[in-house]
Every structure is written in C-alpha cells, then in structure tokens.
Image (cartoon, rainbow, N blue to C red; front, top):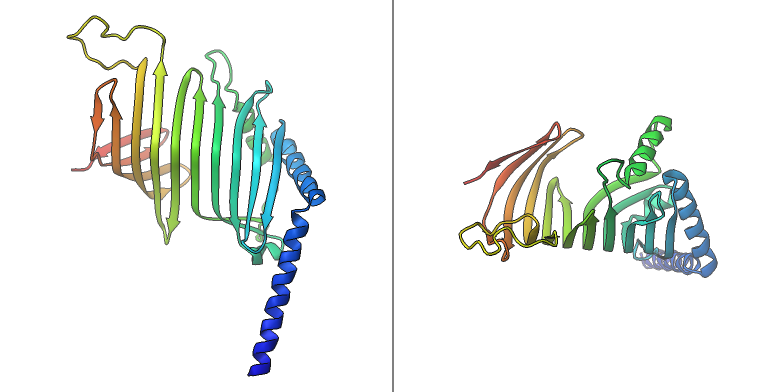
Length: 271
C-alpha cells in the first residue's frame, strides 16, 4: 500500500509539473503572439471585419484563460465592441482530447456602439448577415463537437452601450444555471436621455414631470428563467426596483410573469 501511494504521488507530481511547464510555454511571448494571430485571423475570416486582441493569459493549473483588450470594428472602421477583459473557465480533461468545454465566462469593461439610422441598416447588421451565411454553408455537425458550451455562470461588468444618441450603463449582470435553476440578476442599470431642450413642464408647475427626453433611470432586477427555446422565453420577475429622481419615478416590489413569443412580450403582474 505504501509503494502504491508513493507511485500515485510521483505520478501526480509529474502531471502537475507537465501542466506547469505547459502553462509557462503557453504564456511565452512567441506562443502568445501565435495564439493571438490565429484567433484574430479566424475571427476576421468568420466576421469579415477587423478584430484586435492585445494579450492572452493561460493558466492550465487553474483551468482558465483570459483575453485582454479585445475589440471589433464595424464596416465603417468604428469600434463596435471593446472589452477590457474576457475570462473563461474551461475543463482540462476535454481539452486534452481536443474539445473545449466552457463552464464560466466573465466580461468586464465593455463599450458597445449601436447605430441604427432611419434610412439604412444598423452598424451590426453585417454580423447577422455573416451568421446567416455561415449557417447556410455549415455542414452537419459531428456528434463529438469541438466546442461544448456547458455554461453555469456568466457575468457582465461595467457595460456602456451607446445607442444612437442614448446612453445605457450597467454595473453588472450575472446569469447562473445550477441544477436547471436559471437566474438573471441585474444591478445598477442606468438609462439616460438628454434631448438638449427645456423640460416639458418648464415654467408649467401643474404639468407632469415625466419627459422621455430627460431621464436618469436606475434599476435593479432579478429574473427566474422558467423556459427558453428558439421561439419562446418564459420568465418571472422576482425583484424590481426602478427610480428616477428627475422624473419622479419610484417603483418597488414589482413582480410579474413575462412571456416572449412571436416577437411580442406579454406581462401579467403577480400579487
């Protein structure tokens, strides 16, 4: 029994040493540059636009990979997406057999530019067109997929969305899937508008204070996702707090069932 334990210990140390050595090699300048070049080339070919990645960190012992300074241009060479850091937690054993199994993903420091003119396509339309084209040309997937998504936790932090002339900010949004209990938690969602005009109730004290051109909404929300498939999403709003001191909005303890189907949203308030 003693010899068996010593053999197992030696094997474990050898495996740890190999993984540590592989981690050091993967984080060398030459290998990092090669990985970044391969990743950007593949993404640019798939998306038909410029992609940049400033750095990659790989930790095989901790079973995670981090990408830094990721950006994607639109067709007018504007930064459509910029992400400071993308963290992915993978499983090592599937990786050894040529498969990527992603368990956790976190994105932080995200800037998103969305431009939707009235007389033309949105600046992200080319991504949708590329996805449709890829689906048409894609052959039948083999049973053993190279990429396996088994996402149990995902998180967005410090998100800024610029949509035409409106700004949206989000401190964090976290999605968890544990034993088929799927939950989405949103904290610090901020929506601002400023049409640079006087408020509707300016010099009109008897008129309502609400003006969609002057808003500063803050919201915290929680959702239980009851069902999600291609055409239907059924969720339950379990927590909702929306405030706007400028417009006089103050909503607390709002709960509702939400059904999204056929591009329509149906709400039924819970008492």
